[in-house]
Structure formats: C-alpha cells, structure tokens
Length: 94
Image 1: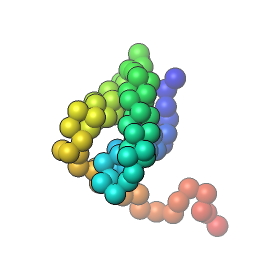
Image 2: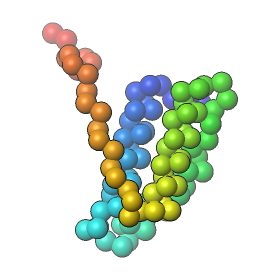
Image 3: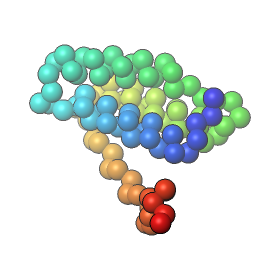
Image 4: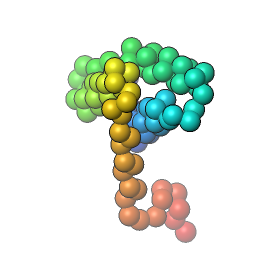
C-alpha cells in the first residue's frame, strides 16, 4: 500500500529515532536488544512497492540504512532532522 508523503516522512524519522536509541551508549543492553530486534523485523517489512517509485526508493533506502547500522553500529551517525517549512502549521488558521 502506498504511503502518503507525510507518512513517509514520519516513518523515516521514527526509524532514525530507533537507530539513535540503539546506538546510545547510555542505554541498557535490554533496550538495545529490543530495538535491534525491531529494526531487524522492519527490514523484512520495508519492501519495494510496484508502481510507486518514491515509496519504493524510500523503503529501499531505509532498509539499507538499518542493515548498515546492524553491520557497523560504531560507524552510525544520526541524520539531522529536516526543518519544518515556514508558515503556520496545518489547522492553525484563524
């Protein structure tokens, strides 16, 4: 199923937050183990969607980023958050 653009952005930030959590040296071994297990499961679910180039490309990129982290967690560098566009938030009209 195709993910809307906002959902793709949110999903990508969630994955980035999970990677950052798993890489945090101050987290417990249990936390890291649970997050790593969830990341491994996510790579199985991140499959290309036929006919949707943007969604497929993002899924492949996210899966590759997770695999790269799992292979070499010491080389992980968190991605910077993309700033929100200027203007009022949606639903903030008067």
